[in-house]
Amino acid sequence: MKNVIKLFGIITLAAIIGFSFAACGGDGDGGGVSAKLKVINDYAEPITKVEVDFWGDYYGLKKTTSISTGESKTFTVTLRKKEDGGYVTLNLYASGLRMDMGYQETLIKINAGKTTTVTLKNDGEIE
Image (cartoon, rainbow, N blue to C red; front, side, top):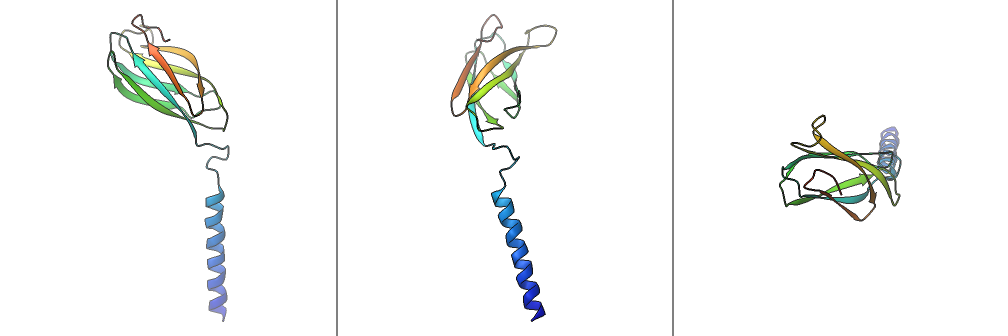
């Protein structure tokens, strides 16, 4: 009888732990909402890295990549909170950009469930 009670207790404890994991929302602030970022390269050199720095609402995106002149790539940015979106810092790395840092930086607005398109223009500016 004692073994049956112990077995029942272990099963109950395992069920409680399992349900606790299933009910957990990950990092506790409602993540899982994503947005798309499409990067178009009209610059003379290939883009070698794309970074999105979060301002409290996004997970960072640091992607080593190669986007040749005239090509584009789309990346997924995961929001930390279930919000419509917000502003993030976008860094695009390519040879010859801003000799002091090697990348171009701009502030962009990104929206949940939508695609934001940016272009690295032939003069090295982001549009």
